[in-house]
Length: 152
Image: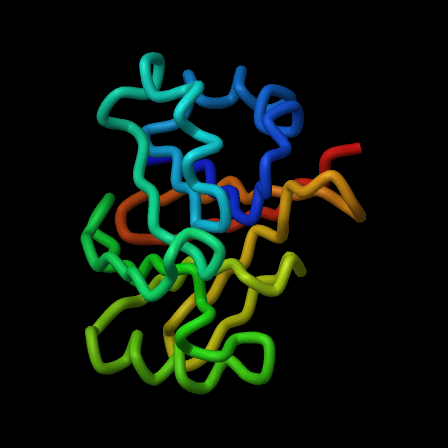
């Protein structure tokens, strides 16, 4: 199973168009909020592949929990867990839920962290300012292989 994960597009449709060709090979495309509706232009081709959550600029506070490829995951924007300060709250929420993968945004900084069997991934942002990045996550037999990709 392959996931393409983006966040914090803030109206930068052109950055999404740069990676649109990857959507065909993905099983799911996940937008972690802050202008999740930027994906409206791609809904007709993505259909049931698209998963979105609200970010703080979209109304905030939404989280989703589901299992894909045998991996239980927590998907949210991250603002309600104060991820700009620390990953402790979001990590504890993942442990409470029994999730082994956490996808979050909000900080605009791409990073992958591992803690007690939990992979925490922020794909970075795709704004008009700064470095743009997204994540590709492969899940095979419950094994999570995450990669951050910078858009040049």
